[in-house]
Image (spheres, one colour):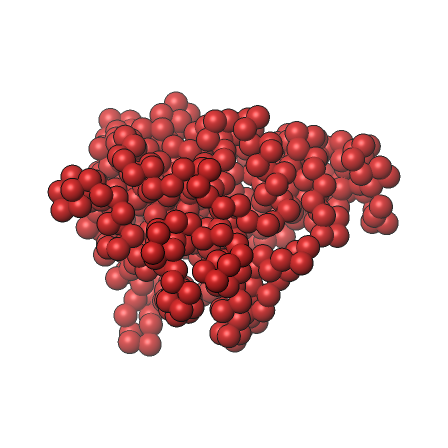
Length: 453
């Protein structure tokens, strides 16, 4: 039982609102997931064993990473940088390896952090016969072929997911993403960024589409990862129509989150299964599974991490629309969103791109880009044309930001790959399909040789 005072609705709102920062304190946080594979068999690694995930986590500790344990298992690593900011390496349910980077000042720092991480991972992986691949969806293996990691919350989720959608277990076991986390100045700035970024996530999905294969064959999707989210759990995914309504703000998002059924509460090292139950009831009356207990602010923050819309609000905004991919696109996603959302003129221009779209446009576009990529259309325009405009807006925003590396180069160079994708109208997934039907002669296993980190 907790001795803390009962949570109020104001407490919940405040947990998100406290993220507001003046512009000079805005940071960028990059997250990216990748698939590990045994170089001999191409199979996904188990947790235990000489070539397992635990061996990876142990080997990385030589670089100053400190282990984080749960129920006797190492399930994450943490490391502070010179500014005292913490980065972490964590495990997704099927052993996907995730770097949750420290909040950093510019894309140069993000790309340096990402490069260092991938170099460290490769050094350890080479010694234990593992490789890592950046893609949005596992190109070869079935759900039942994927080992499950010993992390308590995932047991609750695996049991609950099939009750809500057909593809939730695929989300857990067979997808990888790149994510960008951004700050806001105040509630009005949060609202402007949330609305604009939510409308634009399908454009990012098209630009970053990199998952055309399922179980060794073309799936009909360019982003099988994005398609998974259309049938995972309607309570906690999607385009959040209410974000575009008058009066949206922290309060409205808190009400939405309160209405999303819970997964769990963590007590000590135990995840108590509260799947399907109400956070409102947990706050006010308690729940039978935790007699005499009431929700805490940590429970609320944990609950916010179990919401999976295309843009997610915590004490910052998370852009969640991109497939996993190579190092260059990890950097490119950060440049895209920093360019758009960290310059006032760019944010206004980006809103002009999408402000005429209605709810039906948002929902249709979200689904269409999974199959059509840059060939999809919205409000009479091709997604390719919108993407060209979006990348141009980001480029101008980065020019205005004027954040220079030691070599006096600004952040615009990180957009080069996206400029090529948008200008050509050819997504990374299209290029993979061309290889499959050409040089690879239908052998998806070539993806592991040609595109591993």
